[in-house]
Image (cartoon, rainbow, N blue to C red; front, side, top):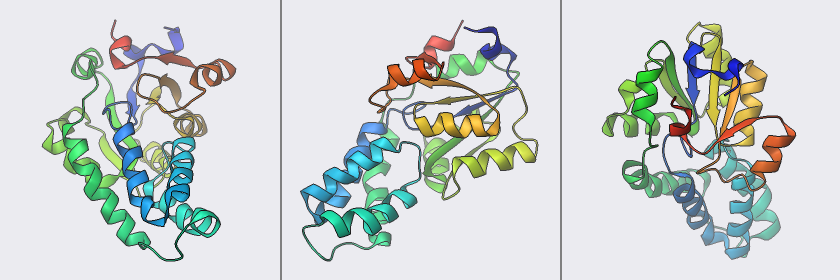
Length: 223
């Protein structure tokens, strides 16, 4: 690993959740599809395409975009579930999956190897849902810097936690989406791309174009 990105020298590690700590990308994509389906197959497929192209953005923004942009253009029905109804349906569909999906191999070993670092979750997932799931799965204690999510954006969270001293430099963001890299760069954090569970379709070319280090999973970071 490049010396600049040697995790043993980092004071803070920031983790995305879906596709990095939990193998939950696919189940969330399926849930987006099912919740949008009352508006028709074309709208649901377009929503999945929008979701996968905008990984890491909160469900609140995604469903608002679906109703304001995709439904008027592609919906087969003029009426359907409201924003609040879609959010509630989506949350119900993903909760069980978040409690049962695989946890990243090497997570606990990486925690042992980076005892000097503060750990945070900064996710596009719902903050209350994340905290509940991580507590129930016995993972909350690993993240001594806190577990943060939507409705705040990752940019907002990173700016706030840097400002209050919770994120200390040098800091590294471990993410699996283009938005993760964008948010990390804007906040002045180093970045490593996790490819194993990512839904970024052109990830290899994108990483090369942006001179990013990519690894398959967290276990690959353990020396």
